[in-house]
Each structure stands twice: as structure tokens, then as C-alpha cells.
Image 1 (spheres, rainbow, N blue to C red):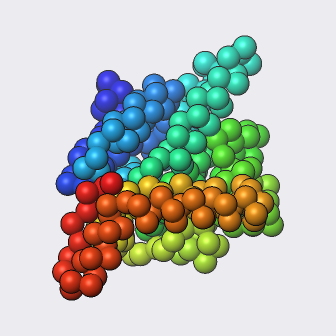
Image 2: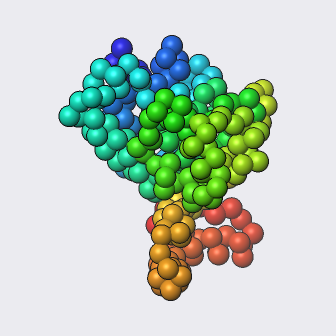
Image 3: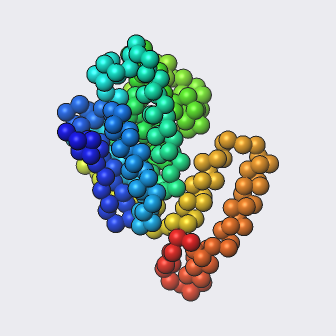
Amino acid sequence: MAVEDDIQFERDGHIARVWFNRPHKRNCITVPMLHRLDEIITEIEGDDEIRAVVVRGRGNTFSSGFDLDSLQSDFIGSSTAMDVAVVSAKVCDRFYNMSKPSVAVLEGYVTAGGFEVMISCDFAIADDAALIGDFHIRRALFGGAGPIYRLPRMIGIRKTKELMLTGKLLTGQEAAAFDLVNTSAPADQLDATVEEFVSHLTDKSPFQMKLTKMAVDRGLDADIASLMVLEHLAVGVTLNSDDAAEGVSAFLEKRDPKWTGR
């Protein structure tokens, strides 16, 4: 099967839909799939029509992590052992820093490498019955694409240790209470919940979405004085944008705005 079949990319109006498509292996991830995801990110960033990204798995499961057959044959005990972490971290970081907001839709198993992709997305919406967790420690492995720096910023250090040191799995409902996902829904309501959530992203100014996301992403990475400078600059850039002028005019004229993304 070609890697284009293992990870699929669809354009749906203003939405990019990315699918993991190895349901026979619970959508386990391989290095070629990571390289293809990297290419997809570049395509998404270069497409001005795309305003949001939805990441999901075929066969009602998100991803149970890196393909352990590949890990055993290609990386464990090898001089290339660190390569898998390097490529995984690079691609997940590119995903996290995309200019367009991303939403992970969680069903079935969301563990190990799949969990790392999920925490690299801006938002996550889970099936109530999904099983979500870092999981690496159960196989005496260590996650190489974000848990030690993404998770504490999301849920705090104690909850991070609870997930990483026990390997426990949370249901979608438990993950929502854990502040790990934005919301959960019963399986028969999941699609509608996702589409309603995404609709609040695709109707906004693409210019302002990019600027706001970039600034918020840096919000925990600098001191307050530096962030205030960033904030001042963001306001200055905003007030010189076409979309800000359009947003104000549309409000005063009681009409829907027409965004240009500039």
C-alpha cells in the first residue's frame, strides 16, 4: 500500500481533512507516514482557501502509536535509534506551529505516537468512549514528540506525571474533565459536534487567526515584559490590516464581513 493511502489528505471547502488510514493496525504510524504528513503540512500552509485542519483516523480509531514492528526491525538496538524521535518531533512541532488551527477527532485508541499527534493539535474532540493516554511507559518506551513540553503546558505537572508515569488511559469523558481535550460526545453525536466546533474557526479572518494563534502559542514561552511587546506589535499589525478594517466596517454597517486574509 502506498503511503498516500496510509495517510490521506482531502480538501473540503475551507477545511483540510487528514486521515490516518491503517485501520488493520489501529492506524499505527510509520516514518514514511511522518514524511507524508510533513508534505501535507506544506500543502496546507500554501493553500489560502484552507482555514482549519481536521485530523482523524479511519476505522473508528485515531492512532495507537508508532508501528512497533517497524520500531523493532529498524530502530531498537540500532545506530538509527534516535532518528525516529528526530523526525517525529520535527513533524509534530510543524503541526503545532501551523498558521491554521487544527482539531484532532479522537475515537478508539489515542496512545503513544497517536497521543503525541493529538497534543500537537490546537483542539481535540473525543468520543466519550475513546481511550487516551501517553502509554509509552507500559512498553518501557519514552515519547519523543512532545509529552514532556506540551503536556505540562496543557494540564500541569502533576497530571502530566500521572499520565506519563502510570501509562493510564482516560476515556473521552475523563479526558475532558482532565482538561486534556476540549469536549467529548457520544459516538452518534461526534460528527455533528466536530462540524459545529470547526464552523467557529472557518468563519473568522484568516489573517487574524494566524496572528492570534502565533501569539498565543508563544504565551508560555517568554517573560511578561517580552510578551507585552509582542502584544503591542500584534495590535499595531492588526490595526493596519484589511481584515480589521473590514471587520469594523461590517459591524457598523450591520452586515457579514468579507475576509481577504490580508
